[in-house]
Image (cartoon, rainbow, N blue to C red; front, side, top):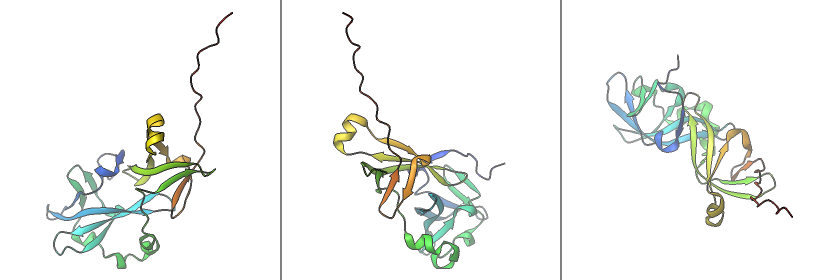
Length: 179
């Protein structure tokens, strides 16, 4: 059985700004402020959070989450929250400070597609499964925003996400008249 109540894709808004609830006290102990992305595999390794008691920035690792509820994330107790400097294994990821929202997206052939406007995370593994790309105003009038599956991502650099080439759809044409 999964340790989460529901394993599904969740948009960024539904996983951020949530309370962290202590199973021991039944009370909120902190609030999620931002995800910690590993740019090598697009996994959310944990979350930055603000401690409810002394307002310090702490880190909640995703493996310490016992359950995800609509009200917030359930953890055993306050002691699962760690100072960023204590997390030796995550030191490199924390130093990178990778942000996904706003990252430029382009194809392998350097065609600019747009910027990441949202993402969907699979809640059991915390891997980003889809990124949503908003296009320029001109392109969005003709094509709207794009949904990019993680399998279409070719490379992630500090400045952009490079995806496989997009399929071009041929414009619909009327059949030739029969003479």
